[in-house]
Length: 185
Image (cartoon, rainbow, N blue to C red; front, top):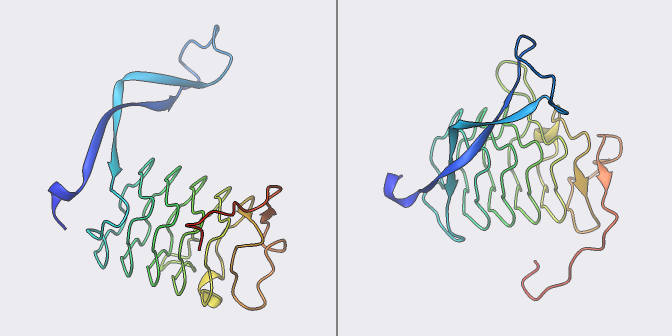
């Protein structure tokens, strides 16, 4: 993977938690912005293949913008995808064991044949409150066993493995109708 193929944007303030010893008398929340700390955000254009088939174990993709990117067969074992945009991303046959997709946008993502099961340390793949509307999870059956899906959103266009019961996994049905667009799968 070429470092030049990944565009990094600077200047996004990092959220930090105040400790109990810090003065919080005028704070309505324990979250504050730390102006001295910034995040590097990965942005790749739709169709980019620079991460396909690569090893990204433990990679940090928090807040990344990877909509429409081809990540096929990449190894994302224990990678972080908090609040990441993966809409329409191709993630077929990826190793996602132990990865964290909390609050990520995975609408219409192809996760077919992906391994999202228990990792080597007994940890789960987390999709807590992720949007899986229209996502393709076919043939991920046993590979979804142990995944944390509490609060993850699905809709009538989401493709599940045979016999999978989303409500039993703690998933929430979307209240909105899937968008019908010319480019929808």
